Length: 200
Image (cartoon, rainbow, N blue to C red; front, side, top):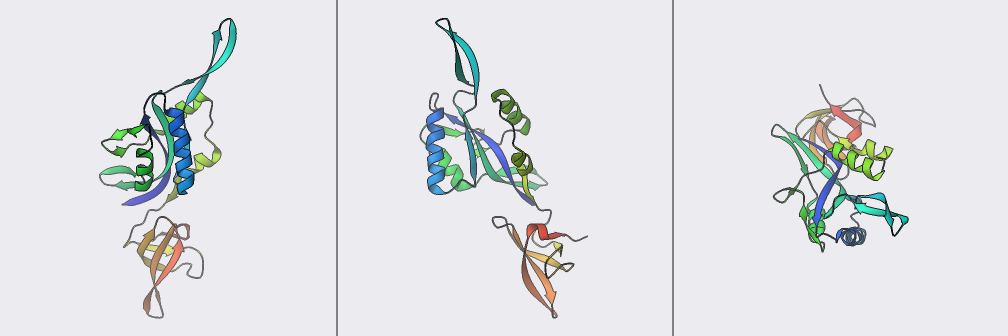
């Protein structure tokens, strides 16, 4: 199975009229719990309309999706023969789910399903937001095409050009433990994801 950390937008369902409050409460919770690297953005999508009120033109912000709040989260993308799955951090899921005014994630059962990239782009177009360069790049933060038991080649560092077997993969710290033969015995060596590639 191939695992990748990616940023995805999700929709959460809220009580109507609670969207801004949910956004504020969630932002505070995320900051207090130090989870800003998992839940990276919270957005109540609004578009500005110019309405005439008592003969005067006035700009009014209108919610595009009343009863919904958008969240950008770092999730684990798992690709296997059965297809692609996006696994949300369980702690983040719990925090979001238990925020006042939130009735749940949009998804199947309790599994949140991320928005399609095109859907996000359309929302951003309507509200006049651009996907930042950083976000375009972060669509796929780390891609690894090896799994435990695969043979990989070390590309840089003291063990460059050596081949070894993957013993452990640490998604959080983006490191991989490779068993390399040294002095006639297998020795574990820890290297960054971008320092290895799958051996042919």
